[in-house]
Length: 353
Ligand SMILES: [Mg+2]
Image 1 (cartoon, rainbow, N blue to C red):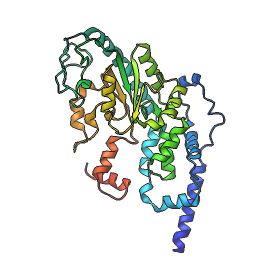
Image 2 (cartoon, rainbow, N blue to C red):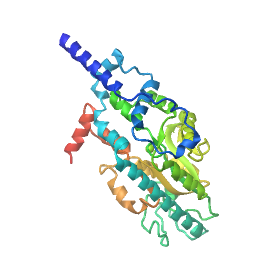
Image 3 (cartoon, rainbow, N blue to C red):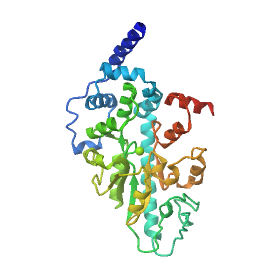
Image 4 (tube, rainbow, N blue to C red):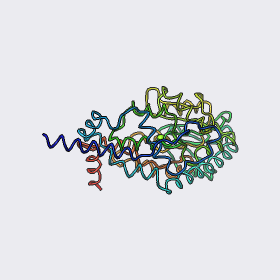
C-alpha cells in the first residue's frame, strides 16, 4: 500500500512537470481583430493554446484529487489519440490536404453553380423518390446514382419549379475551426471527452481557422452562394461560436446561417430545412454524416459500400476533410468492440485486420 502511494505521488509529480512544459499563453492573443482572419496559424501556436484550454477549464492539473482520479481510472487515458492529434497539429501534409480540399471545393462549387443556372428550369431533371438522380449532361457529377437517404438533397436541381438560390452547407468543427488544442489537452490531462470541458473550450472562442477555410466561405459568398453552417455544437453554444467565427472573418457568422444541434445529432432535418428555400450545391465536412444521413450509422463494412456507391459525389458534391482524431468512424468502432478501455478496444479492432 505504501509502495502504491509512493508510485502514485511520483506519477503525479511527473505529470505536473509534463504539463508545465507547455508554452505559456502569449500575451495579448485575446486582442485578435477582424483583420487577423487572413493570417494562417503560425507554427507553434498550438502548444500555447493548450495552455489556454488548461487555464480556462479551471482544472488544476497539479491538483492531487484530479491527478489521483486520472491515475486510478484507466478509462480516462487518451494516449491512443497522441499520434492522431500530433498529425493534425504538426504535419505539413495535413495543412496541404486542407488547402487541397478547399481548392477542390471552390472548383466544384463554381462548376455546380454554372450547372445550376443552366439546367435549373422546370422539367429538365428527373429526380425519383429514392433520391437517385439522372443528370447525363453534368460534367461534374456524371450519371451515377448517389445517396438515397435524403431524397431530394442527394441530387442536383431537384426542383421542378422556379430555381432556388444556391447554397453551400459546411460543418464547423475540424472543418472550419481547429479544436485540436482541446484534444491535446484531453491527452495531457488523461481525460476522456465530456460536455462540461468542451463547453469551457467553446466559451473561450479561441479556436483558430483551419487552412483555407475562411477563404473558401468568402469565395462562396463572392459567387452569390448562401453559406450555411450545420454543426453539432449545441444551440447553447451559439454565442461563443458566432464570436469565434466572426473574429476570423467567416461570412454569415450569425444565428440565421448557423443551424446547431437542438435535440438530435442527425443533420438530415437541418439540411432539409435549408432545402426548402435553397438548392444545396456542395457539402463540406470532416465526417461523412455531414454529407448524407446514410453515413450516420456504419454497417459491418464501416460504410465502405456506401462510399463506393457515392464515389462520383466525392470531390464534386461532397468535400471530405481529414480528421483522424474522432468522428463516426471511431465512435462506431468503439461501440462495436468489447473491452475495458478505449485503447484495448482499438487493439482488438486491429486484430481483425
Ligand atoms: Mg466536424
